[in-house]
Length: 144
Image (tube, rainbow, N blue to C red; front, side, top):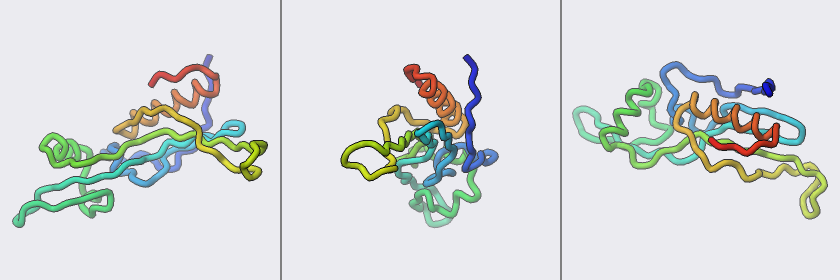
């Protein structure tokens, strides 16, 4: 069965910047179906070091000004050369509006259990997001 998913792109893909660090702290896409809101977002903590001339090594995180100049190949280089200490990811969250649950205020959204899978690149995450939402809408088991 083919269904069309009404995806709202919140943060468009940036050319040559598909790694999750370039989207840190942002929601990427959203789908609202019935009482559920599916969100593709980024999570985790970014910590890395990088060589600079002439003084040696600098530490960085998702706020590092160097990211404005870097592209995916620089992130891969940092990883291959042991400069990455901790890294974030893309993940899927599902929020459900549950107005009739005792103990919760009316209209209070609740985050449901979602797949524990995480994704490194924008394209990989978007593909998994569409697959997850489609299977959830059709009430089929998700296997990332």
